[in-house]
Length: 66
Image (cartoon, rainbow, N blue to C red; front, side):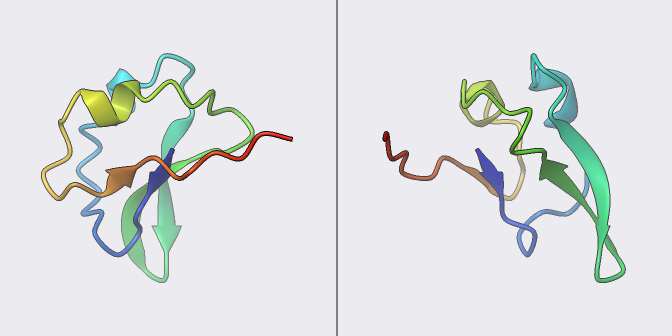
């Protein structure tokens, strides 16, 4: 899962929906946004399917399997 840092307003509404706590706040160029730790994310899509993002900043990239 990826959060678009330009579209994200840092409301943190998505944080409680991540079952592995991979979403956290981050300071990007002086703007507070939410960010997904790619090492912890299991691509379950709960944050996206919850539809809590007011700016639709969460999206699932195309996954490539080895």
